[in-house]
Amino acid sequence: MNLKKTFYVLCTMVLCLLLASIAHGLIENWYIDSFLAQGTAPVAGAFGYKCFLPWPITVFLPLAAIIGGYFLGQSWWKIIYVERRFAKRRFDLFKLKH
Image (tube, rainbow, N blue to C red; front, top):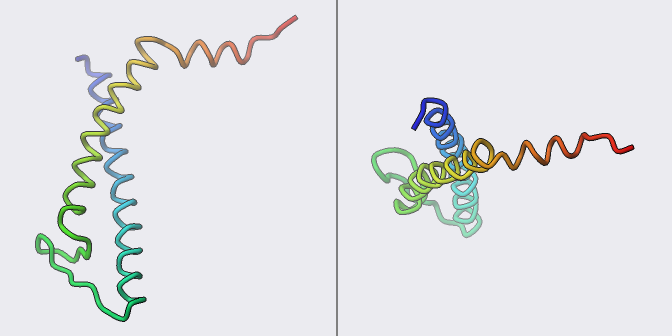
């Protein structure tokens, strides 16, 4: 694997991890709000930090993001740089028809 592809796949994995952290925050916010609406308080303490989600969700989201980001980066590398499907469509859109 060349350096450009490695960097591309790594950046895709980091992007997916960042999106997973945003999703984690939104899910956790909903989870806390649903507990507070019922009149109870959620219990924190998974893995020694203040996370209110159950531990399987806390572990699954980042792992799924990293693994999914790897496969997403591989597939988009193939589409953009190997098959060049994006370049063909992009240049076809801007052709002037006489």
